[in-house]
Length: 220
Length: 224
View 1 (cartoon, helix red, strand yellow):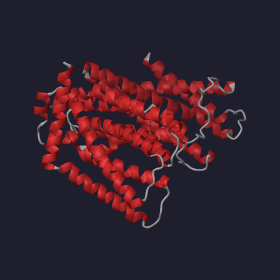
View 2 (view 1 turned 90 degrees about the horizontal axis):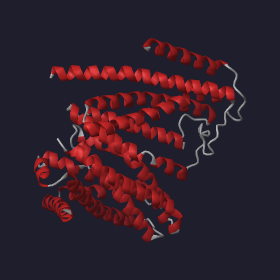
View 3 (view 1 turned 135 degrees about the vertical axis):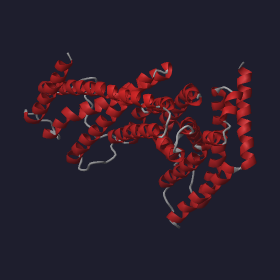
View 4 (view 1 turned 90 degrees about the vertical axis):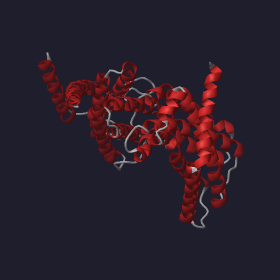
């Protein structure tokens, strides 16, 4: 079962990379070939949000049950989420260079992902500043919740300050998907592939963190 | 039951006021900090008359940094003087948190009064809608204090307290700061009250959310 999963992740992502780079793309005004980034950039952003939500969810579970397993899961999810968040920032910024003319210009979307990176950074800084495992789990869970709860305010604040130049989200305000069928198929496959990749690595990461925790608590 | 809660909140609040008045540690150093900050602003802009939009930003920089200097100390000082165990015995977590929150509110309001007076005197900042301006500043202060208090409680248990505070508070405070700077700008430019109803809504709901979440989570931070 596990082997099948691993191989299918490999095959799906290989297909997506091939299709995303090589297959022809329908003509989109002002975007053209640059639209190909969406096959990679959107799944990365999606996963960084999913990972953060998972980390938040496990933080709440930890505080309710005081079961250290949940903290390990929360920490692993946030570590991976941070990685995908960096990838989303990098792919987005590369695209911005070619479409908007500069790598970074404080578009509302760039600001929000910057804040997400800052939250992850602060969370890791807090974790490394506490020695006791139990206290580390408790305080970082509290911080993750406080930070996570103020994050949604950006949805209301950002549009009041500056107009975004970011292309419409995949599911936009009108609830319609403005995408060519062939593009949509590649995009959805990519989303599936990267989400599967995320859960596969997350599983390994969680097990690794769990072993690390066992070893460190045994040596005390 | 309810009166006991209020009574304990009052006791924690009065205890902090009293210990602050005895040492005057925070208020003295913060007033000097404010003086230094505003002098630097004065020397940086020289005799030039800056636009009020820019001045609003500078005003909030002064408010943010002086508040963070004072607010981050609330729980750290209990840990440093090893009085947190005694505090734990006398009052429940919600009472302690509310008491500390009130103390911090008084502290920042006193501080901001000085900042504002000095700032207006030195830079010639004009406020065209003073009533609205005061309301916006107060709402901003409440949010600043609410978020800072829970973060001050978190860092009091960590190792590198001083450097950790700005790192942790910035992402949490940013939604508040963006909104309040914008609202202050509009209020000082003399905009009509109903035109910033949206900003009001954001500020009020931010404050409500942060205070509620802090009250719910504080027991987890406080227990050992």
